Length: 278
Image (cartoon, rainbow, N blue to C red):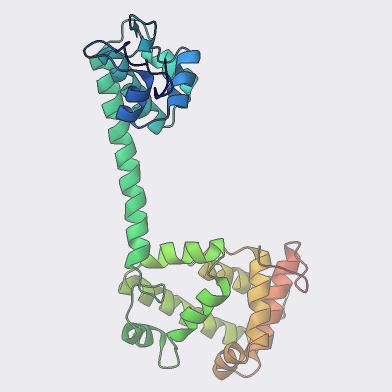
């Protein structure tokens, strides 16, 4: 009778020999399913080399060691067919495979450490998305800066790829980096005001150059396309807080800046009225 025997295991009276494992016991030992071992047997990747006197196939110590090597290569991302070719390479012994697997694992560990470092940098960024305290933010960006603005931006764009870029880039910026960005922003705003006073027309070469400087500044935080830039330009005029900020620099600057940005976007094939965040 075979009642009570696990799949692939011998019934009572047909035990495996010393050091040999039935498929069920081998699967439990290495942490895979019996179905997986049957599949690997069928494709010739790992075949049990022994048999009990009752005819059941069993895994020897060497077979189990091969299973472990398969598991390491699979964890490293190799397809099963490639793993079989590697393991059956002429002249490659156990130590050769161990050395190769160790080198591959060290390489993977290095990549994973870099990934962990990137995540740590993101975690190291404060909840506002930058490695600055609220006091430092006000010191760098001015008394009218509101740290809550970044929280609002996260609520609006937190699910976007651009927000992920922002958090990654902001997470590695030092206070000195932020001071440099703030200085560039102040200089650009002064040039905007001077250009408006001088009668620079949106769509002109000078206005387009200023628009590109602004888009490059936005790209400090995320890759800013012309379509996204047009959306930002529209927001500068439509949002009373942005409009108030720019109009405080010089009256009418918010609308002028919107027109400058939108005209530059149009010059790059974007319809500024229907531009979307892409």
